Image (cartoon, rainbow, N blue to C red):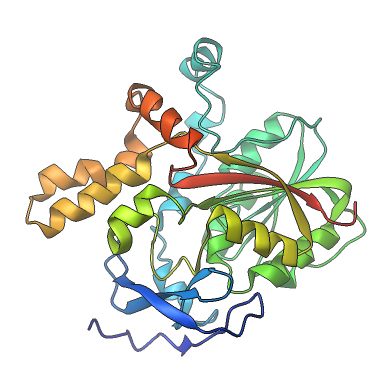
Length: 321
């Protein structure tokens, strides 16, 4: 048993979908990203099948597991030399139009008002602003939000539920690998449904706990990321949560990437005693894959056809539209 740090207060929560059938423990894991202490069960609701981390750190104490060097904060930084897309990036878009990872796949919409939930340091906001969108963000990390503000974008610091409801509304709301981090995703989704214009869209990406990767690697699955990931969705349960939150799923895209699988292999090899020089490139693969994404694309594409890659992007519309 890995002891909990004194900074952490735990809470035990029921299934947010209101089920009463009880839970069963699926696995017990720990923080493999930053190697911080604490051991956390993942339970499955016996009624609806939704997986959640329980017990879990409270909203006030979970920041312990989000240090300043947290990957998404660093990975979304826009450095001065990168504020304009390099020629290579433009060339790749022309030469490889079929190689779409579906990681940030958006509906075909003209530029309008966009809200990004969990905007981190503002990389996506910056890219969309360059395409003509009026962008705003929500980000719980003050340091990451400050980095996005330094680019000139308005960012609310705090949970989604506390964001003020102003007179404007949004044509598009996005959340890239965010919903699984929220303590109360249903209330957050209900809040977002009040912030979108009639006919507006919601696009979210989440890890796919219904994938082969999860079944094979279990507590060593790279996308598990305990305890910062509080919910672990399958295509069925993400649709149920969105429905409860006031949204109707339109499409689910299974992303054509195998990054989680490669990094999960790193965890397996590390536990078998392989040295860091062998496993570190596997851990770094999601951020450093580069051209190898193209080399494994045929395999990833085949996995995606059967819904077996470890990430999915979901398009939704408000139910009453």
